[in-house]
Length: 203
Image (cartoon, rainbow, N blue to C red):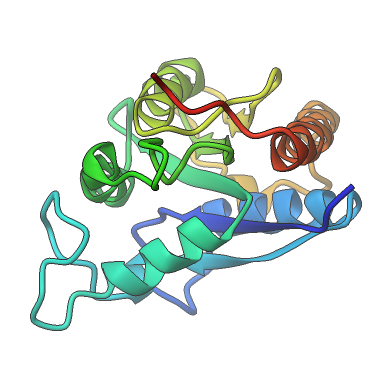
């Protein structure tokens, strides 16, 4: 099995070093992936000057080209987002707007550069909505070329109209911990398969 790498994009609205429930879940996913010999890093997108747009480089100091290079270098991409008003964060939506450019970026076989890469999802919030947000992210990730494994997401949502954050839950709820382990195991498995047997080129 080839060595595998991962990149976790934390789409919290909070810049470092503020505590973030998304950062906690992202770090737990990263740790679980490392249990399967998948090494990588987590990046807080809001710490970088990513410009609005739908190209690979919006110029004028745009930080997306560097993040894009890290995305393309990794075998596994995980997006972690909070829920706001039942939606993924604006930072997460901006990431997808930038990933939209991958639709027109292809290799010498005419395949999208994101083919043969797998993606997973982490969602945290204080109200129900994790399934809705996960559905939005699954569709968008698949559209721009990523493969989603079975059990391709993990999440935690608090009780309705309460104020407890995931970062304040001690210990981590068993159900979330279990789905995080499943996510990591399936991401590593599928990434290994695609590394050894890439998608075929089109006609």
